[in-house]
Length: 283
Image (cartoon, rainbow, N blue to C red):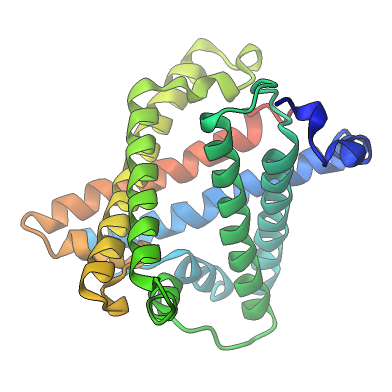
């Protein structure tokens, strides 16, 4: 089966015309930058907690709240929100149209990759909606949405199996991130011709550290999802903020939290590098 046989082929040309426009590339790059800002703030707040200078272990919603609380916070959050929307659009294009030309043959790896893009688009759509609520002055709770969704799904038929499957998938994603950090093959997505040798080296080093930290966090989230399924207790589920809090509660927790927090800061910087140098390929 090849992509030309796809039912989406008739609308490929109109989408191609849109993605070839300069504003779409700028919006996608702003999306990577916005994601970087969010993770940088999450990591910074966690690092402050680790060294005892304030801060807190929080999730991406907490990062948005930290932005809106600053002077001109709504204006700043508006820019971040626009970037998040751009990132969602780019993920949707990656999901359906393979702009990075990863190959014509559809196989398990490509299907899994596209499913990942779709889930990412869905997750950041939720984050964009939360951001809009904050800009409008609505009250947004601090609870992890993962916990809320886990409680809801567990109440459905076959809920425990669905949560267990989700947990295994999230752990698998975490392992993939750790493998990606080890291999460092993400450098192929950069415009290497525009980067000096020093920039390339540091981009890979920062990327490895950041992606590995994200892999650890995903692994913890997945383990707690599986625990929630085994115990049929949705309150056992943990999101990003909960995973960081779990690290802080372990032996040598301050060190563990500090290292992962620095890794999330590195991931934020890496996303900024993506915003500048990543290939935003046309269809």
